[in-house]
Figure 1 (cartoon, rainbow, N blue to C red):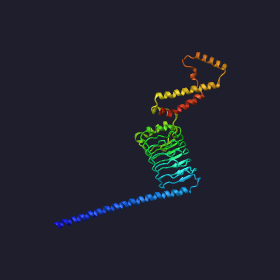
Figure 2 (cartoon, rainbow, N blue to C red):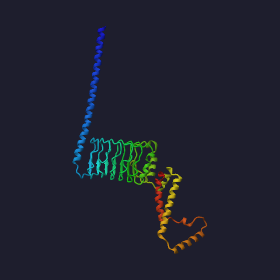
Figure 3 (cartoon, one colour):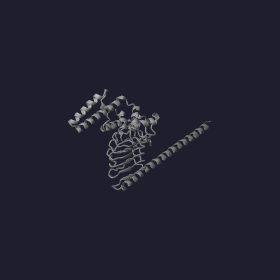
Figure 4 (cartoon, helix red, strand yellow):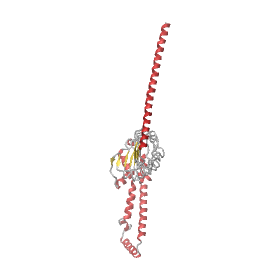
Length: 337
């Protein structure tokens, strides 16, 4: 009996040892696999950096374009010495941040899509930038990183984590905005686009939670109110607003009587100033003034109503011009009050 127990313990011990040895082998194998993968990744990054260095060293001082996509770059190489560079493509790398001073100040087009960028920064000197692609990064807010990019016309921010459109109020030339597949959840998050009312012509919002809470047609109408020059919505052409449509939609989107009266007061005040300027410029003679006064007296005697006949006269060219300019602002005025 003791011999059998001893024999069993020996067998069990052997099994435990076998299992332990197998676990060690598995761990070693896994570590080897991880090590091989890490070595491959390091090798790819190192190879990409070396290829980027060779490419940059081959560029002439007067080069206007540089293409470095999918090189596994972790940082942006220094291109600030290439003063003639207009187009730079760094998409598909592993860049985390944009260091200040790394980019040439005369860039017109910059592609940093499909990287790991968290913050929009380092663009302060790019005052001539016209096209910026930061799609498919890890950006959560726009912030003030684009405040100096006055010349920007096209901005692509699809595939990030942006929940509110802000920080674009200085981009008065912005005509195309792509913010698909972000985290914009309501029309209110788009309210600050009113600052771009005079320039924005195309906007893409597909893939946002907005479509779950606001019907697409209602959202389109809202954007047409705050963006009167909008021509394309989610890649499709839209009907251009007439003045009557804009007024109706402004009322629909809660333009109250106080706001409407304020527009009219501004309208009448400006017209009055314009008419005073016209009268002062013309400076009629004493004879014409007397004749006009006599004509007014005679007209008032013939009138049986309480209203002055001058109210029935057609508006002057100055009045027409001023009225049309102010009523055009019905597109966006309710949202600024």
